[in-house]
Length: 275
Image 1 (cartoon, one colour):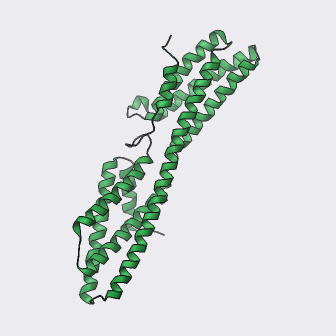
Image 2 (image 1 turned 180 degrees about the vertical axis):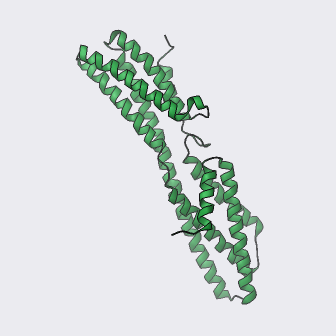
Image 3 (image 1 turned 90 degrees about the vertical axis):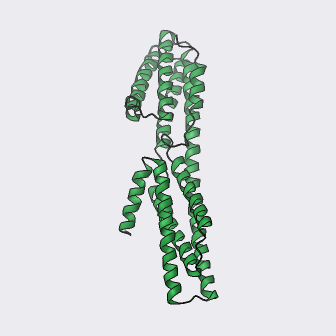
């Protein structure tokens, strides 16, 4: 179902959210304030046409409470989805760091000069993976370039490990191939987790219900002739911060709430000084 101009507003909001988070928060706050004011004006108009009874006011309050309850539920669901994805990213970064560390240790056993070459490549690989997790505004370190570098290093390491296994098919060389395979698989898992977000329709629904629920609150204020400006601004401010937090958590490489690359950094430090 299309809501016409409102759909345009939602699309505009999504465009802002992908760019500047502070502008997105300001947009949400202004939109909710506008919805509140429209609701107040409708409430005043209804009160001028017909003086509401206590029963009618109670009915409006009941309906408004129901909408706010639904809004709180949607906010909780959205925050839970964003938090789950945040935790998945943290876990996959840790798992990948462990896999890289295992590959490094196995490259030191019985592989001769190939092991040293693998260790050098693993050091470079870990630095690239750290750059991917932290994100960068430098065009030379864009995600696309870093992923290309990741694939190139993976291919080079696999070629070396395969030659070792073909020349000396021992349990050690087999374990080395297995650890490299796990490391490559986890890089894909990590990429998937960093590109899995809260579904856009959930955020659209959250924003849509927020506008209508706040409008209903404004209608109730207008009906009784009381604006409650301080409480209204506090409510809308807190609600805006909650929505912005969901968006922020859902942007692991560009927002304020980012994934800590510490496990990868510690793994790199464990390699010791470069030779």
